[in-house]
Image (cartoon, rainbow, N blue to C red; front, side, top):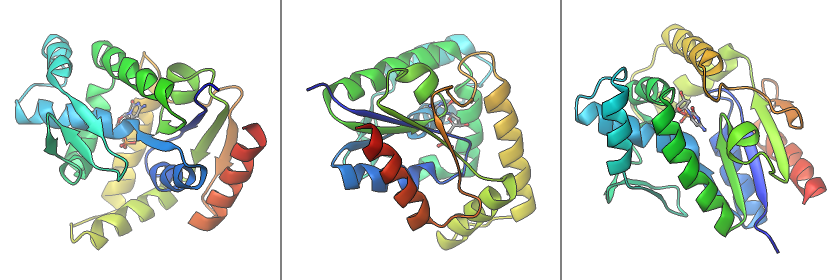
Length: 219
Ligand code: DC
C-alpha cells in the first residue's frame, strides 16, 4: 500500500494547522506543518543577520538547517527546540520573504516529499496540492476572511501573553497574503482539484467534521 497523502493549503490564519493536526490524529497519520519549516529557516536567517534579499546566503543557509518535526508538534532546528520562537510575528514576516527564494523552496520541497513517501501524512502549507504533492489523495483549500483570520491570530497571541493589535495584524495578514499569492514561484493558489472550504462562519469542530468527511470519501 502506498502512503496516503492529504494536502491542505490556504492563507495564513485560516486554521490550517489546528485542523490538520486534528485530522491527522483522527486518521492516524503524521501531521507535517510546512510553514514551520519555512519559519525555522527564517529564524536561522534572522539569528545570522542574513538579509531576505541575499539569495546566495539563503541558499547556503538552508543547507545548514536540519529541521525535524516530531509527532507532538515540536519543531527542532539543528537539535534545538524552536517550537515557540518560530511563532513570533517577526519570524512569520521573515518566513514569507525567505519562502520566495527558489533555493529555499527546492530544499524544503525535497524534504517534504521525502517525509510524505514514508507514511500517511496530512501536510499543510501554501503549495502542497499544487507543487509538493500534486498526486495527493485528497486536497483541501481552507480559507476565511482576513478580518476573521486577524481576530483568531490576535486571540492566540493574547492567550500566550504576547501583545497584539487587531488592525495591525489584519494589515500584516493582507500584506502576507498578497506576497504569498503574487510571488513568482509556487504562489499561493487553489489546485484545480482541491475542495474549497471557507471557515469564516464555522467553528473548529464544524471544520473538522467537514474535513473528515471529505478525506474519508477520498481514501
Ligand atoms: O503557515 P505559516 O504562517 O506558518 O507560514 C509561514 C510562511 O511560510 C508564509 O508566509 C508562507 C510560507 N509558506 C510557503 O511559502 N509554503 C508553504 N508550503 C508553507 C509556508
